[in-house]
Length: 308
Image (tube, rainbow, N blue to C red):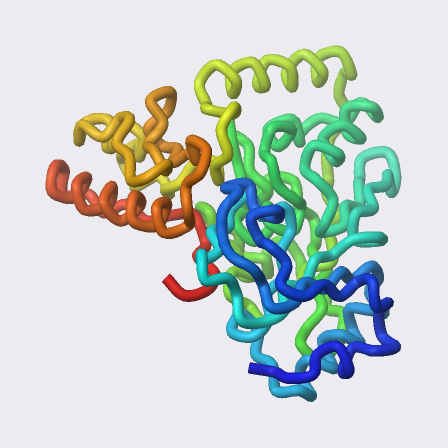
């Protein structure tokens, strides 16, 4: 574990941007998990470059000693917390702007809904699917997020990232290697800065109506009233995770306050006071019972951080 992080980051970012023992339940949509040793807010590319260099000089390793979070909408942090540095991108990383008639630049910390709204306001179609995805552009890029027939692969023209040495690198859509809930950035030792998104001209009223329709469908079918990480499992080829779970008799199945949603079995929800351990145990039980019932192995979409 790296030591004297405050001293190493002194002068790079403000003292107020370094928080000790930050409760990570405040930074994940599961609303559970223990404290991170350090929670560091970084507001610019210049700051990020200096922070990454300082961490590298201190011997810190990507994922093991530090981790970059967005909205925490696909993250499960251990109840024991995270023994390292959590980097939270703010400031210029939240920027969303129109580049020309059909292109938008979105910083990696920008919320998907903000990009969808800007596209709608400028009569640009193609990003409606992401309006209800409760995460950031950075997370959506890493996971090639998708819903209702759309995915990031269809709209991303290029991605900008920063490597561990603080160098800015641009990747084409082809180099991003988007696949089902996969990209070249998954596990790659870099920090995503943002992306150029290419859309098409459309009719604002039609775009607005599509977004409203998708939101109604989400509310009707998904347990949005409870903390969760969205779809907990990847869709197995030829199957639907939610149906496999339902067929295994697991609707409403619980471990502590973690429960398989009765509204949508593909969701694990926090009914109130679920611990990360509850969620983790429930996910493993679901995997076991579904395999016993159908012979299909479910893979979680949720990323575990810390010791379980």
